[in-house]
Image (tube, rainbow, N blue to C red):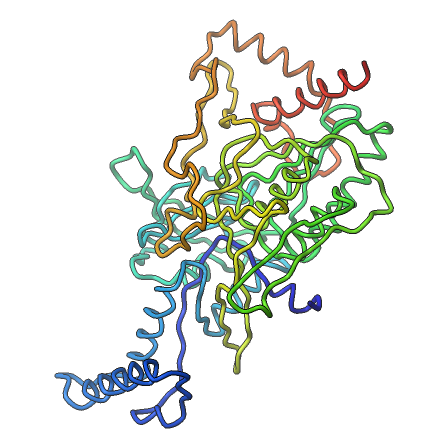
Length: 466
């Protein structure tokens, strides 16, 4: 498969619903090729209905709009990741993989017909204002989002830097909606952030998979490896990563795997089937890795986590991932239109399909942020693939309805003495040297999953040395 075609495959969790069809009047069946008698009969019924409405409906109707609505219903009935896109929607989709844009910095999707925040992007206006995962956006600049296309909502929230947009939020546990006036800023499409946690131990956070993610990862690794001298271990953070480009997911996994399958994709058409394999690297990176995932880790992020898990190249820590195991391709059409549709399922190196199930971590640990006196719970509010309407049914249902095991020995609150002891312990654990100026390193010292990952790597090094 050539690279151009491979790059078309997208694994983003956000579904963009749109419609377009050009046709004037009835009689269009003359120009359609029906590959079966049943298809022909169905199209004939559709044509008859359109013709009847055009002639006899109480008010004059726009035939083009009627057909567009019908196509929308057809596409929406397939799965939540397929879409027929007019030029505006296609343009918004392309923003997701290159360049930068003015906006507020949130990843959104739809749940039960409601515009829902999947995650705010750190350091953006939305994140700074306190927008949270699970928030429901009910209005944008006073206009209701009910029945609003996802791409249209995204377009309304994007805009020039310095211009304001008002979004109205409903939040679980709160009785009244709340308005946020956000000043748009340039949202950089930077996907790799990194720091040295302490001498010999690095931390890399991949926020999404864009055009240059693999290259940026290698540059980040070179930087922290050079700074560390003797490199002992890596924390690779894929939490709240909604996915992106397949070729970048393959290349990222290939950085750490020298041989074998990274991911395979299989669909109904054999032309869509492919197996992506690792290639030997000039740089040997065989140090231990802990990968962090949560329910916001989707598609391309799950490919990387699944490959590293199956090859036993990393220990996976956190909570079960989103569970998007389907492959989409984007096919540009005439006049700026495009069709985005599902063509296959993907499988991890061991043949696992994680569609609507997710990657299960080796070590289960919910995220908690340590404050001065108490531990604040901050996980479990994410949307998952199995929550989306018309999601593809998993091929093998395994423990889908079983609750994740609760970690033992953890409490929701700490005494002031315990908090002080934990804070002192964290200060001794970290010796952070910032290597990416745009990254807020202070949050890491309050992040229990990062703390646990670093402790595991240090413990591994001690045992290996002994």
